[in-house]
Length: 366
Image (cartoon, rainbow, N blue to C red):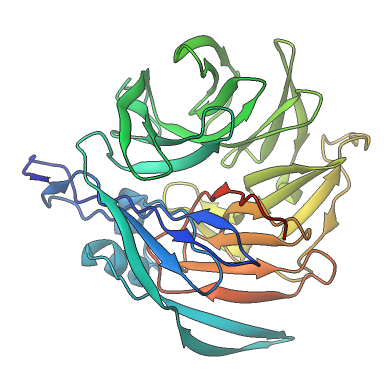
């Protein structure tokens, strides 16, 4: 479906299903937008890949269009097309230089969903309890409380179950479930949604928050949410919000995971222009012990997983073997990161603003 709406832009949402004994099932959500172009509401595609996984994607068109040193990003946004054959790279990490060898992924389309309910999708999450995919649509501004955002509910087979499953949000970003509650980062609020009733049960405003981005939840129910522009990670516990960590050492925290007693962070990098999201130093993947003590300046000791800066990191997920899949929003790449050595391989390149990563685990172990 294509609708001409003045002042809006082209958007597409992709679901890519990769079946591989080493990768499991992954979600790939691609948002393509170019200012002033017609709105193509949703292109929810599913592909079957023999090569390693595909991942979720997001676009920030306004930032890309204004980026002084992001011409390649602007070009990708304006291209507004989809590729059924995606290039895949393997990379050997060496000090000072990378060697990249291109290989072609082989895929066939499994399903496609087009819907006016999918507008500027930012994040996706698979709920095992309801066997459904939740996709957050920012719709309007990512930083203004305009009430235009919503969450859609989609079956794993690509059927739109409920276009506006929960509406009245502002700019919903990262999501994660715990005990039947879907927690959503929404500008300066942590929103709790009862999955069974699809009702918002609480909205917790975090004073001073600017850009809440991703959510991670510990086994005991503590919720962690990143604020990329404030260089903070907040902790929510039984109605109380505290600052878990803060400071430039957090690398403009973006993607979050809780693994055992560690908070794993994918850093965007040292941001020098919050309007353009440009960085002087790219971000790392690192871990913080949940039991560590805060220093006097509010920071906590971190353990680098990637020993050198990797990229403007966004989404992060963990395979059962302990290694990570990480997306680079600016360069349009997706990396495999070895949790023990910190080495990385480029799994995909030439993507359009890859962001949050959604994962549906297979019934088999890997």
